[in-house]
Length: 128
Image 1 (cartoon, rainbow, N blue to C red):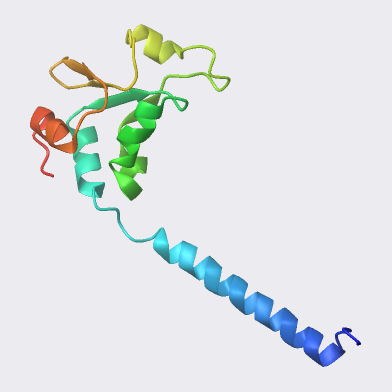
Image 2 (cartoon, rainbow, N blue to C red; image 1 turned 90 degrees about the vertical axis):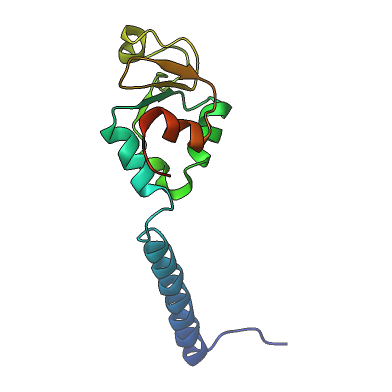
């Protein structure tokens, strides 16, 4: 049995791989161009001076971000952990952040733990 690929078949194989690559690239490009469900809500939180303090290694912070889906990148998020996970950043030390996640609101109040979107809307006046 001869499994060698002749030049004609090799060219078709290259074209097929390139087409598949282009389709995959286009999918990821256009999937990231569509707005997230909570884009306006996340922007409003920032406009209302709400701040979400968290740490990359914190599972509750990851859960909080997950509530926003594709819109999580628009959150008014402050990373409190140093890259090695061993210390707290100066901005969070100055803000006296003691647990994660912590939300601080324009009126100076704070709430720690995972907050529902409804609670965030209630605290900020942002429309869900």
